[in-house]
Length: 450
Image 1 (cartoon, rainbow, N blue to C red):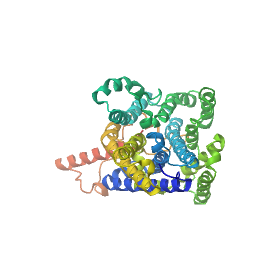
Image 2: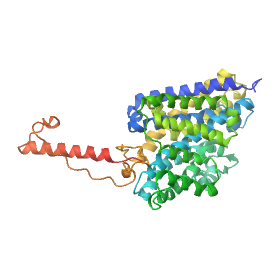
Image 3: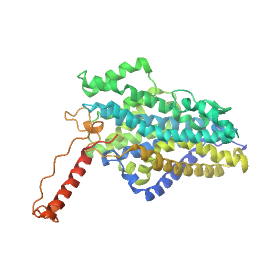
Image 4: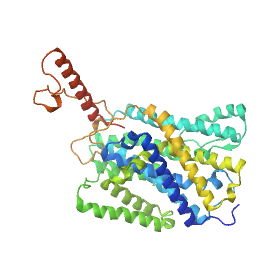
């Protein structure tokens, strides 16, 4: 064990290194898969980057605590630093919930018709495959830890229903090994699924209650508070409320004050984190101010290649990083050296290795599991509906796509069709093929993506 526990300043420097390694790793992934850095339409590209940073905050929370919490060995950081990294993880989860509310509740408020079967099928296809992979990896690592071999199989199969419940049921112990040490982040997924389950109520208030966006969201919140309490789920409401903001990002006069508001929220959270950690209202106001200002600004740096790719793989990174850290530190502790005796530099290097491997495994999970089940990702014409708008622009988000109108016939003066001869058998075939391509392109343009 180290002679002295790592103080807050040292742990903060470690966390900064972990963030830089995560961005450097995703920068390399962006070179391998450039399309992952531009998968979202430009107006929402910043959301991918914010999602990636939120996942990294959770990662930065778990790396310094891996020795004490995951391996259940002696602590290596002092109590103040422990509270600080826990605060980082809390902020990351709160931002996750804001993003979910912004993307889903906001689009519900701006939709006239919703195919709920298609909505939940898409949610299952998006969330279940990667989660099932994470469960399999956790069970395999647990079997190695308890050295059970095939004797581990019956207990693992018996634990599967609880493991696959997305945190609705507590993670079990399998032959004495607590699976929460590897998949403890799944409690947030249970809250996400509960939010999806109550979204039809919000839609009913908006559509059948003949309420406008702000009123339906207010009534929705007042109906759920007595049932769910005034807990962390209210950050979904913060995200949904952000879609009601007017679009003022193009006004240059307002970008400066909005940027100052965002920076002020971050600085205030950084300097008053210990007090805010115990103040639900104060913390909520800070996160709301930060998220609202980002929604209006749509900062371009959140859409840069490395940050955007970090958002693309964020779900797999969120699910798998605890297992990777457990394996990296656990193997070193068992076969190489006592990880509790590491210096700050040595611990930082090991943590950076764990972060890089987490990004690698998350990349493979996205490439071979998530992406295969997501289906075709189709950009929408206007992916940011507002409840104030009298014309709903994202109805096709969860509906069958509208049929595109046929392209007009090519004319000799049309630059796009100069290579197409308007008459003749071959010319007619080329013109028909060109019109078909344009129709398909138009159809893809107006279709929405979940």
